[in-house]
Length: 524
Image (tube, rainbow, N blue to C red; front, side, top):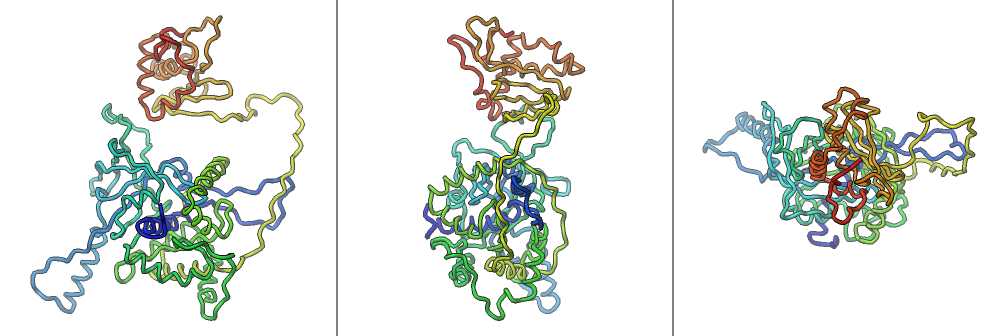
């Protein structure tokens, strides 16, 4: 897709606005630098991940793009209002406009965010369709039901999805939702693989943003910011080459960098919670328009990127090969970091409407400011000598080094596959720790007396379902014989393989022998 002109350029501009809005809430949160030098052989500290980032990595977030309705004239009775009556009518119209100016959820575009690359901030979108919504007794929206269309499955990269579906003449607002993964009882008719139930996401994790003001307004904003960006800053402007060396511009008397409020913001280093409060404080200006997004709100490093991260984003957008290469590197880099859950940020009280405009001016100064301090020296990685051991470690001190593949079985427990031992292990959640059973996936030898060995999912699922007939783990582990019943194993396998992702999880079982059914007739 060309981003130099036409629809591709508009989609790239809209995507850049979306990235500018969510980046402060998704980037790694790094601890403040300490004055002591790192120890020899110590690894550099990794940044913590926000809860919103963890949810996006686990594919739990849904993006809703909600259009704004065209402004409609209030019906008039023919009477011309003047003085206080006209002012009162104007206030009444302003009070009701906020709840009616944006379209309903049935008019929105819905995207399931299946993958996110946090180096170039590119996403994979699955288009969803609106089915129904659920409100409480006060009419407050509580849940939305979405559907995966069978006839027109639409999976694409985020810019392509925006170019295909967004009407850029309208104004669009980004609203975030999360999958409803709470444990609850479901009717038999609700067990369908193509319906998603989503709940409103806490706005402190990812606030609501107006990411598109309409084509005319966005192009006007781009023209206004063109002189400021042409001096060597790079930025998100599509169609042009990245900025120069990224050097600092000379400071001009009276510029925003010399203003005291700019220096105050530079010292404060606002985080995601304060940034959300500032956005909430200036939702609309005097004309009823939402404030423009902060183009350079994330001036800090993200995922070990340097200060010219925006330049690399332009290259990644324009060159398909670079983006694919970056995707692979980003996935490997992110997968190596253990998840660390950060407490949810506390809400803060917003200031006056002008706070956002002052913050925008300050952040623009930060984007082109000189280096705030010397860079930290890279830690030297030296191999450390192994610690001596007096004797063999007990079972409680052993650390499992193999990465197991887990599949949750709702209300029953889970099944894990160990690639080193080539075994499936069923864990019963009703009786807790110690209630488990494992079976191998290896094919039996020619002299083996274990018929059916290597295809254990049917008997493991039947064993999990048999937990209701036993009072404790010992009786369940040693007393259950349901796995000897072929019909029970066959029914358990059929119901399990109907779950999303179950066929992929079952790929580790040995292949069926000639003439053998999917579930072996006899097992031991």
